[in-house]
Structures are given as C-alpha cells and as structure tokens.
Amino acid sequence: METRQQRLIREILEADAPKTKTQEQDHSLKQQAWDRALSGEPPRTMTPWEWQDWYAAQGVPITQTQTETHTKTRTDITQHWPSWLIADLRSDHAGETGAVMIYRGLLATSRDKQVRDFAHRHLATEQKHLGMVEDWLPKAHRTRLLPLWRLLGWLTGAIPGLMGPRWVYQTIAAVETFVDEHYQAQLDKLDPTGPHSALREVLASCQADEVAHRDEARAATTERPGWLLRGWCMLVAKGSALAVTAARAA
Image (cartoon, rainbow, N blue to C red; front, side, top):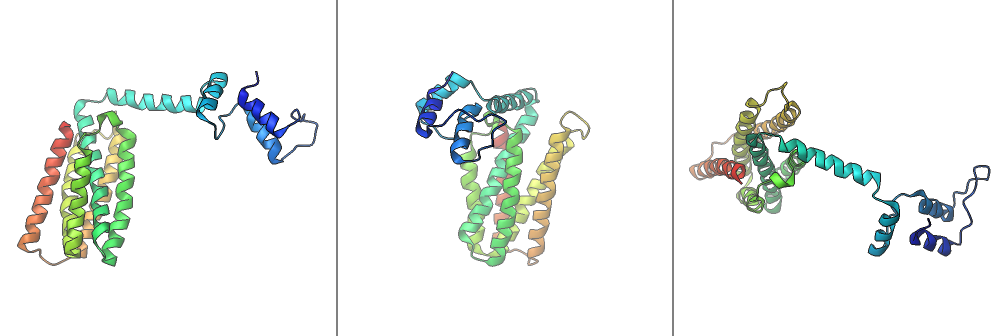
C-alpha cells in the first residue's frame, strides 16, 4: 500500500514506474529519490506527523530494534553484577568525569604553552577513558553527584593553572598517584580469567595511562614544592579519596 509520503514524492517528481532490470539504469537524482521512497528504509527528514504515518505503515526499522536490544542486553548484564562492582565502576565514572574537568579547568586559566600542550593531550585520553566506562555503566547506576564533581574537578585544574606550571604538574602527580592506587585496588578484586575479565582489561588499560600521566608530570618539575603547594596536594589527594567514597554510595 502506497503511503502518503510515497504518494507526495511521486506527485512532486511526477515519476514514472521504476525501470525494469533490462532497462538502462538511471542514476539521476530524480530516480534516486524515487528508489529511496520505495526502498522501505527510514527517510532522512520528515515532519512529526509524516514520521507517524511512516512508522504506522512500515513498522520499526530493524536497525533501531537491534540498537534497543543491544542496550537492553547490556543493562541486563549489569543487573547480575555484584553490588560492589557496580559501586566500583560508579566511582570510576565519577573520577574520569572529574579528570576531564581538571584539564578543562587548566585550559581555561593557563597560558603556558607547555602546560596547554600537556593538558590537551591528557584531556583526549581522559575523554577516551570516560567513554569506555560509560560503555559499561548504564546511566541508572551513575552517581547523582556528577554536577558537584564537574565543578570540583574544574577548580582542581583551574587553580593550579593560575598559579603556574609547577603547581600544575605537582597537582596532576598527586591526583594520578591516588588514581593508580585506586585502580590497583579494583584490579586486585577481579580475576583475570573470571567472568569480568573483559572489564578488568579496560580498567588495567586506564590505569596504565594514568601512571604515564603521573610519571610525565613528575618528570616535568624537579623542584621541591613549598609548604603551600604540599598542603594543596594533600588536600587534592584527600578530596579524591572522599569523592570515591561518596560516589560509591550515591
């Protein structure tokens, strides 16, 4: 049965019936539009009521059904995870969100070329980590405190950015030292050959990147920090630990 959308296209284009296989193939825009109208594939653009007509006549596309099935499958998998593992991954998601904001804060306040290059490279890595964790953790299990972690993460980067490169590198070294220990504690709980081995590989990959960030930051400054900077780094490390505890709980 010809839908309203197909009828409108036919009337506008005044197209003839589709050519048979024995006829010369027509590659014109007119013929391509007609072929798309008869293909049964979802149109690229339509008004809301035209979409309703199309879905009523054609049904839900198989690609959309597959996507919904895939999402449901991933959610069902997490429902069988132990609660401690969901809490661990929730803290990882909060941490990677904060890490992204740290580097955005740095870029907002620092004008040092070396620091900005450092921040751009590490921001790309942290965004990759965040995407990897989000692939595993459904939105329903993510912490409700993300707006707070975004703000605190941004401040953790913006303040050292104002203070200068030495503050930046010492801050990153302090953060990444904590993150290394945090990931290692999680890896110790996961059997490399157990049911969560694939997730363990993801976390191990993230840990390796964070260790590289820590070592690069340490190598960038050899000066012993003063008491104010040491106090700031202690505050950052303590704040990171408190953030993990809060994220695991909510």
